[in-house]
Image (cartoon, rainbow, N blue to C red; front, side, top):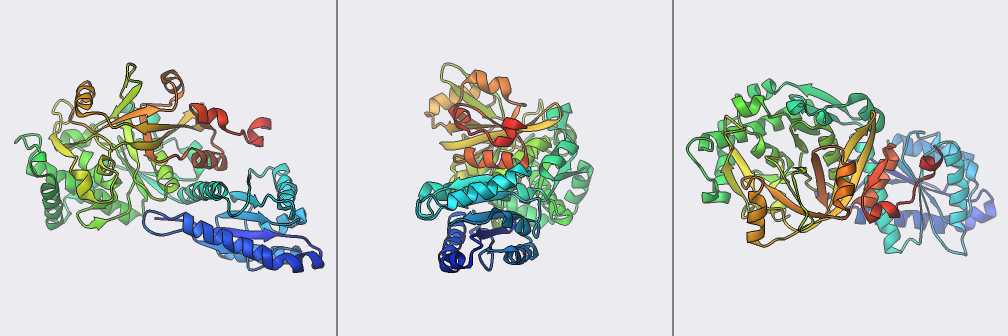
Length: 498
């Protein structure tokens, strides 16, 4: 998984008799934070983040410049400024100006009476904010678990913003069926997040499909047959061995073009050109977003169906925010007021991972069925992927635009484990051959439908509300947090006076 380096440095008192007596203790604190971040911010691929520690404690102009130049040469993309005793606030400027003025900055200090680190934090961070720097502040003891979790959330948020900033999204075919909320709104996206779009016609994928090694297609086909058996519901017309192999070929073509062009995430238009002349994209999109295929474990590659750009960008941010977990794309399909449950489903883009939330494909595919594509919509056929998402806590989100200005809707929720008969009845009301997620949201129905920006909702495992809030504040995107969590948010100063 792609990452960006993190810089961490301690600022202290200019007076020689103070900093010489406290430097050893201060460096111990900094090194401990380095250890905590590396240990607790583990990613799904087993990696952690590169944390680069200033070689000395900043106590005067020359040490500030020296440490800043070291961190600059290390190409850090976010900066944690630590405070353990009093410091001289003006030293922040020769430090930051030696690195970059365009960095997410976290000010981090202790909270105890003996050493006034929080006093130094407020004095120095106050100087940064009065110059227009949108910083974050965390104050707490280093051995406090909640403080550590807060720091990890900020690290993941800043990593998501600084990583996606230098990525390019591959838009295969353009937004589908005239859905303007799925359009690649270039200027506001570049201004907020930096990432841009390369649009490629789906004809390119079709031509690359012709070059795919048939032996590799057969390996993928055999893998599905072994995992699914008679749960591949061949009908001799829409779903045949040949139409399934065509879907596998599409997956390999997208993978090849992404690698060749350097794309880290993508979207596939599908309707109507591919679905009426080539194949349904469901299997290819599932495999892209899954953490495995027949060749073994892999990093999920975000792929949004219907080439919905803001869905793809949201998914990529959620992926980085979670340390590389698969993300899910759904239609906001049907609300059941008698149960206060949402049934979110669509053809495609539910990774099989969510069937059991396992990194073992066999555990997930034990709950998956491949059905024939609906001829009414998808003329050339292929498999539709069907399962009910496994229960557990999730966070759902979506980037949107209000008058060309981006914002993000965020809501926690619980995926429910319903009994088989209830699931059958609910799924039959939409499409029982598609994947479903039955969610109870931490907000009223009326609040959700009044502010949600479009028909596509994205999700990832766990409670990511605080990390998403940090992410939005770093990127300058207003977070619209639904339910009680929205009322608990502390509004940052730049939103109060801006």
